[in-house]
Image (cartoon, rainbow, N blue to C red):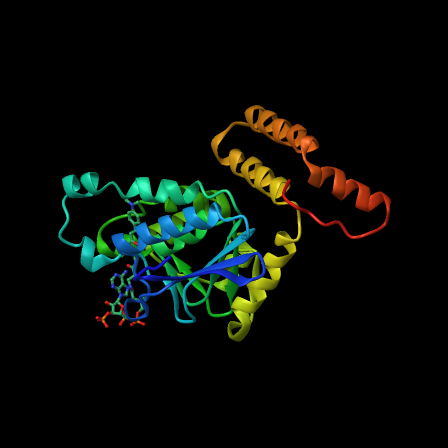
Length: 259
Ligand code: DAK
């Protein structure tokens, strides 16, 4: 895999892949090419049996400061509709493996929306989150008004979206937007440690459990419970379920093969 705006390490650590957004001079502004590269890399890593968890990160100063304003500034509604960035974002959303965002510095606009498309968020002490689109005359367009509101509730989401105010890692943790705050100097190593806990588990159980949690965004409660039940039953046809339960009974560590 070779890309211009992202760096991909399929084996950053055993079973852990890393994708780094890499337009540092532009604070990792998400231009169309970067997003397409990200979509292609995720698809490839999703199909790679050696990979169990994918980490998405930027650099210490910025995860991503949003969509590339310079690229977007002259566009009309018709241009935007023809480009149809949503198909790229929709594909990213369909990643089956757990996707963990390791965020340091700015995660703004589309950057914040991308982070919220991930399954879990580990933030450095210097992380800042925001949806400042309102300050440039637009509004969030890639899920910001929906995912942020579900994560932090109406009052704070409304404030963030309507004023463009950034929140820091502490406030994001208190509000339920992120999983954990870690030191800035070691934020990536800490994220890898976090990812390793999940990589050690049955990838089949992890995938179906992820799907079931995400279904709560799409379905009402009874549909969601039915979806969960079917995934739960399905896991009883896997070797990993036999291994996991046998290991518990035999008081030993389980080894999951993803079968
Ligand atoms: N786009 C392009 N360039 C950017 C950028 C961005 N979003 N953010 C920063 N840069 C560039 C700056 O222009 C500057 O470039 P040079 O002037 O050096 O050439 C360089 O990065 C360093 O930035 P600053 O000099 O501004 O650095 P500061 O530390 O002073 O300020 C900042 C950092 C993050 C507070 C500031 O750069 C800033 O406010 N950036 C813009 C933040 C923002 O408004 N983000 C929201 C953009 S709109 C959609 C999907 C997604 C979206 C929409 C639709 N579909 C699927 C349809 C998303 C929209 C957005 O994200």
